[in-house]
Length: 280
Image 1 (cartoon, rainbow, N blue to C red):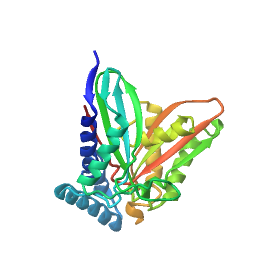
Image 2: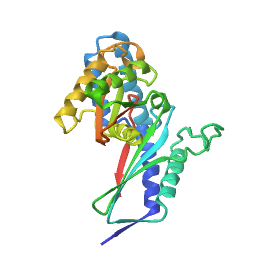
Image 3: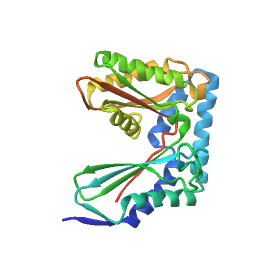
C-alpha cells in the first residue's frame, strides 16, 4: 500500500535542514578536529584548530552560520518505492531552500546563469539528486557546499593501466595543488568508476559518510587509510599554516565501469563538511 506524503512536509523539512546544516558542526567532524588538535605539533596549526572549534561552539550557541559562505544547496532525495509525494517534489525542495535561507539569515550565493551572473536572491535552485529505494519513506539530506572547496575539486579520465596507484597519485596531487584554499583540514570525497558524471556524483556523495567510517570493502578501506596518511604528510596543515592536520578523512565510493576507462573524481570539502538529514 502506498503512503502519501504532502509536498509541504518536504518543504518544511528542507527549510529546517538548511539552517541545521549551516549552524551545527557534525559530531563526527568535531571528534576528528578534537583528535587532530590533541596531536598537532605545529603551534600555528594548533591555534587554527582551536579557533575552528571555538567558532563552531559560537555558531551552535548563537544559531548562526559557521561560515559566511553558506554554500549552494545540494539535496539528496531518496524515495521509497511505496511513497507518494502529493505535489511537485522539485518545487517543494526549492521552496524549502528559499524559506530556509531566508528564515536562517543565510547568505544567498546562487546566480541564475553561469555567465551573466545575476543573483537569484534566494539561493535557489538547488542541485537535487534522486535515488529510489525500498520502503514508504522519503529521506532528505541537505549538503550546503561552499565554493572555496568546490573550486578545488577535480575529475580525470585515467587509463585502466593507471590502476590504484594512478588514482591515489591523482587524489594526492589534487589536494596538494589546492593547498590552503579549501580551508583545511579537509574531507576528501573520491568517486571511482562509472562514467565521467557518475564519478563526480560518487565523489560528492562520499562526503556524506562519517569521516571515521571505513569503506566496507577492505581493499578500499586500506586505500582510504593510505591516502589519508599521504595527504597529512604534505604539511599543508590547518588553513595552510603547516602541520599534521591537512585532512580529517578520505571517503571512497565506486561503481562498475567500461573496460576502456577509469574515471576518477575528487570532491574536496572544507573542515565543516556540512550536511543534515531527515526521514519523512
